Length: 117
Image 1: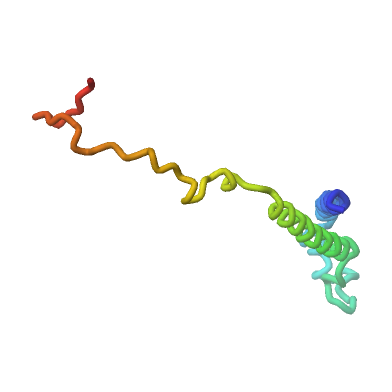
Image 2 (image 1 turned 135 degrees about the horizontal axis):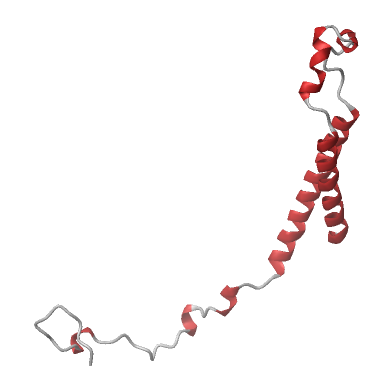
């Protein structure tokens, strides 16, 4: 199921890119505002939504839905994966034989520089 959603996701992304590249820019209809034939349409000089615009919106919806589907599958898989915290010992498992070094065992020197032994 996840593979099918992934294939649909990639196809929707490629089709969105292709449809956006095929559409005309806003500057292509500049002549219509100066008395071209399209200025007397019901929707004005812009006209209704073009076929490419509507198809882009449909594939964008498909892209978003498949994104949510893939995120759902990823969250379900993340719940079943054991993490690195499984190897961290809990408080009762800590070995108490290891102690901290005594702070008073150091030799006192008159210099502030560390001494190597």
